[in-house]
Amino acid sequence: MNYAIVEISGRQVWIEPGKFYDLNYVPGNPGDKIYLNRVLFISHNNIVKIGTPCLQSICVKTKIIKHIKGRKLTILKMKPKKNIRYKRGHRQQLTRLLIEDIL
Image 1 (cartoon, rainbow, N blue to C red):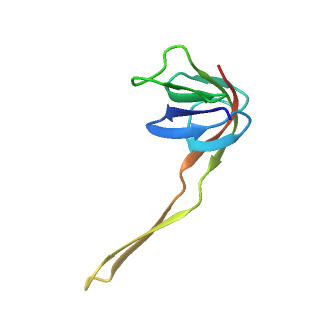
Image 2 (spheres, rainbow, N blue to C red):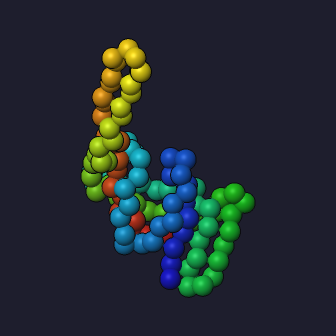
């Protein structure tokens, strides 16, 4: 089983080749190739390599599939005894990345 743990936009994500992941917004156009070089851990055919903090010679080849929005969050604020109520919504910008290969 081949997998790696990489750091993307401040988060550590367990990734496998051939799968796609929804991550925080990554600037770029759909179809662009992105190389992730902050690889913290890799397992390739039960051979494990651990970085301190990152592995220098390993990178992950990804492709932007599309930009999407996350599910809607509703924010309610109320001040008691003042008849003040706020209702706001928020949708996080996300990027869907396809993991092509772990080099």
